[in-house]
Image: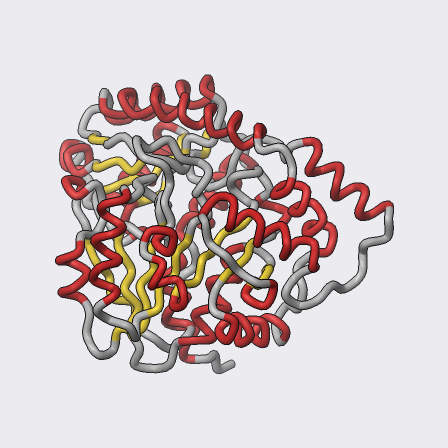
Length: 391
């Protein structure tokens, strides 16, 4: 059987692969703690789940418009105005089966062979491969711990050429949890203003899981002149503990959203009607549940960073948000006589029963990503095991 050439360009998701391996070991009876999964450990808040139940009971189980129900699109418009000072119309909104599909639709709508997309590293594992599936090339902008894993204006400017079609910005970031302050974003915006052909994808999925010294800012909020060539990506998965409900959305120029809607119409059509009703309740309802979950993530973060820095050969910087820490582990790899972060992740899984994700998957070798979306007692047990395996 012959397969499409584009499929050979991509790899299975490393985060999913590690999670599957942990599940396999659990099924064999092994005591495994997984720090590899990128989803909140909380249940969906009760009022949101109830809205889904009521949607079923009211018979809201049929197709909706491809791009989302009017009620949800209005809730998204209100959220973007309330939280980000960005104004959109219903024709500038597309609701998808998760933010991942929104990003995929966008890349398929704008990229051609020969186009380049700037992807700061460490990056979410899916960005480069989704770019390749659109027959374009990801250009990786590598960062260092001393940069807090964030790109600077000089680095951005030096990477731009005639083939550059898009920049993807994800902050707070998966996998580092780092975010840009106001001045840093404005400086990047000043570079982008000089290059009007470049589109910007602002992936804000972790927006509300944030405890940085400054408020969270969106690039379009600070540099309004960029809004007409920017797509804001967001969703309800992370902030509202709704990963399985699969609702994400994109806000952007009407013409681009129309093309993205066309692609979605020929792939999945509308997202789940019941999930859309629940998402309306999430966006329009009391936001105290988000604050409570974020406070819990912050408490775990504040414990886990110094605990990891006490582990032999580990170095970990405090994050600004999300529920990940990114650990520099080159010294640990060397002291254990291993070759790379992939072998270290295997070592921790086999010897400590703790699943992590190698930094190589995020474009940053000699690192590990650890999720702290687990109860504090479970985290303490996991770090104790890691410390033992490193010693």
